[in-house]
Image (cartoon, rainbow, N blue to C red; front, side, top):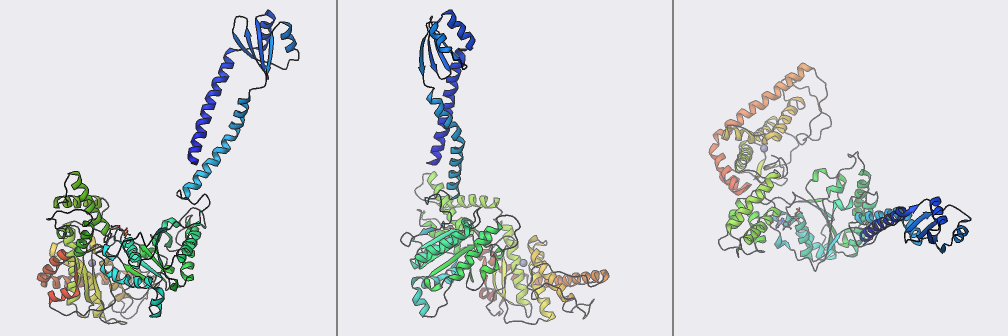
Length: 607
Ligand code: ADP
Ligand code: ZN
């Protein structure tokens, strides 16, 4: 409405200026000098003069119109009368006066208009009026309009199990408390975009039949300091009024980035917002029944304060689905369109490794559009195939698709890790092998579980760790005769262990028992950061140490390669099954190798 007003103002101004121009031009065209005019009067050729302020409009005896501008001439009127001119007087032109006022006020009006316009813009056109900055922009999904349940979420059964408890709690907070359940305050959903984090959060609200407030972390980040903090406060107040309910914060990393490592502006504002969030989370009593869910795909960038007890102390991984999960997701979305009888979703699931739930929803949608374009009444297999191809093409641009050859390499790589672990005495048991890509850079992973808590490690065990890490790369070497860049992180970690052995644990030949502990390092083997090595030994010793580390790694690599060559049959068998199933649990793995690896609890992932 204000925008319209501004437009009308501009149009009005332009019209008036043009009109005015036209007017004055008329005046100037017919005007003459005053002295000339008086001469005409003297000659008696003027019959009538209309005086408007200083402007004289004269009519000649032959009907011409003349205009002139009069100087202050006291005798002018009497001169005119003396020559028999009819004199008429009018007040000065009103219009130009109004016009003047308008012109002088216009810049002001324009400024006010622009200001109002920006104020509205900044609030995203909300209907709250011009001064509701601090109001949270959380969108409310009412229990009556939210009909999403766990049945709508597939392919992440572990995550569903983990959040099921929240539903019980939200259904009846007081009862839950009486039973002595620990009340969860904040739960962090971690997973790649499109894996269904928002969907899962909505499903929790839908199952528990409670209101669902959702807001994106980036909504809090405003250009004015203090606005984000005010919004957080407002959101919590609002939520408490509607309890039991769920607050869902998408893109938590937008506000929750670790503090103190940003040097540019805007950092104060984010910090304030984050602090306010922490204060609010600490401040409320969980028994009111407000559960805060947040989603992120980069948990490692979050401020550690957010993950402390009483805040987002529980993390739920929402992973990309495996073959079976993909089929289940496709089934859910296929219900919304009419599928031909011969459509086999299992086949589509096989063709879409690495697809997220959102990608799969997209496949069904795209297929329906393709079928519609061909005026079919049902979606057929060929439409689905084409849709998959299209979406793969789209994802390829974003570098998110692995081709079949890469997938095979990854399968052998991970199988290599697993087999070496299985045949290395004292190595941690294999828990799970997966070739579902997760995150950037990690194409698959092998999970090992320590069979017991360890505080000491023998030389033999450390060598075993190096062997397992090298297993991936050596497997690629054995099978394909070449190696890929995928093993980069493995090698780094293997080298680090080898260095630690020679430098810190006194297990090397060069230094013997004299060691050089490194600084700034957490517990051994857990560090992924580049170690800081002080110069406490000579260059010659350093060279010797490097040589020794290299020797050790090479020696282990040869041993591992030999082991894998011996187990080639197993390697092929497991890798090909992995290629089809994408995930292999310890039971199946042990069944194939015919050994016994005991399942444990604490997972330790790594590629
Ligand atoms: P995220 O919040 O993790 O980025 P969303 O929950 O917004 O992902 O997912 C977007 C859409 O993709 C959902 O609305 C749903 O249609 C589909 N989708 C994603 N994951 C799943 C899943 N696990 N099961 C069924 N549909 C899914
Ligand atoms: Zn690896």
